[in-house]
Image (cartoon, rainbow, N blue to C red; front, top):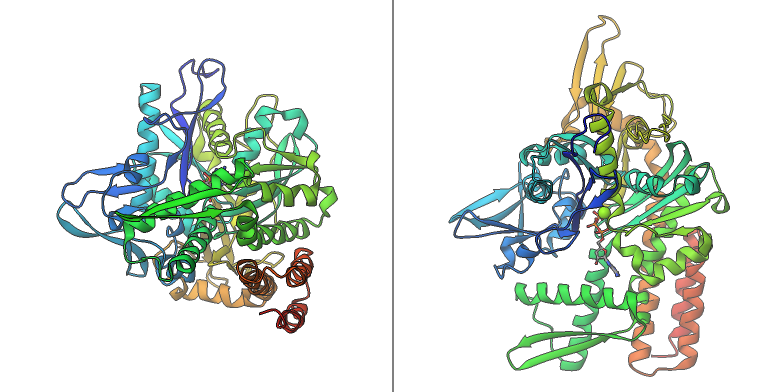
Length: 579
Ligand SMILES: Nc1ncnc2c1ncn2[C@@H]1O[C@H](COP(=O)(O)OP(=O)(O)OP(=O)(O)O)[C@@H](O)[C@H]1O
Ligand SMILES: [Mg+2]
């Protein structure tokens, strides 16, 4: 029961994930947070929506995955589209992999499909709203009452447009957003609730590797949560690992059958995707190879065995890439690795043993924590905050607007643990999204770190991380509000263009970092391809020794970009003797 009202909670926490969504409530009896199961008995629901071409019916979650409808009508990855432009490189790239059709509509990506007998264009926020509606319905069935509001989580580096469109999705779903909070912050709240003493006084890294995104935050916990650094990549996650496995399967098929695996049969491909994902999950739990079997035709079954070693090799560069990003966050926090006291593992992909091994190597086993189910921690934290807002935050409107002339990079607002009130500890997250935009892995800074604000502009970041700018004319003192919203043409706004231009010089640092990651990926790709070729053919030990030496070199994550070309030339020369 809520201490104040004496009524059961009617507010919920929602982790709106790329692949799975999770909803939690704070149980009215003993104030424990509790993820709620859907009708299938699962506490996570696939973020998948199937639109019936003939009727107005839609199916969500497991029902959508198993609907048997054409793959052009089964939509997922809305989170990889939301708030982005249609010509965003990441959207362009994903489009080639999605079995459904995505088209630009006034600059925004829309899914084109047949529904209720008509061809329609659906914006990503509407797709996400279907998932949110389902989460609300699950809660209402469970609580047997109407849900009044929700705290919804977003990746920490979601920019204001992605946040605004997520808010819009909630609005369409008929949900009042009590607050949008960053996924890692929510996870930290869940852990604080579980073990306050362990976290208090510590510098904690939240490492969140999910289905679509990778987020890393470093926070200091001293009764409150102070975010001191944040980094991430919006396109590293389980979906990408599944893609790599699919590629491997197709290669395997081609080698054994001497013909290409059919790629023009969407249902076959989506079955392959599910089976590849399943094999990946199996390999997290056992050492033996996992078979991936597909009925290619009525009389043709094909099985490809995936070993853990092969999986590790394929996704190794991406897993290593997360450590680069971890280093970046540590640098940003002006810390060293040894100064991180605890690492919280969040997101389903942190179950991958190789990922845990890499983190153990970097931080030491004692520092890793996975005591809360990694795909539930975020929703649990959100539900605790939602409950708090219900209990303490009657005057939510006062909490939702923070006006900053941004001088300080980070904001602290200690929360009082004794009263379990998390409502005031989250303003620090606003600093994280100030003018940070991530597009296809590229960082575009509207307001770079350490840069003084344009002196005439007042930047107002509301509690949901959405940026509003008030321009003040120096001579007249007239003010003008510019809401930076997603309209498909953000850079056509002269004010934003000017700010972006001023910030351009600060982009260089980020561009260099991306270049380094890409270089490393390209290097490892060449070496791995050679390795697989040798393993499948000559199996020459000396050649495999050479390969290992170069992979070990790359494992040490050298930072000098010029070294990669030199090493690659050396590698090509050495390995040429072993065709
Ligand atoms: N045992 C496992 N081994 C490997 N991967 C796993 C395992 N369990 C879950 N995953 C992967 O975790 C991913 C889902 O994790 P999670 O639910 O945290 O992501 P999400 O919230 O949907 O995505 P995001 O947070 O990136 O938006 C999927 O790609 C799934 O395949
Ligand atoms: Mg997640």
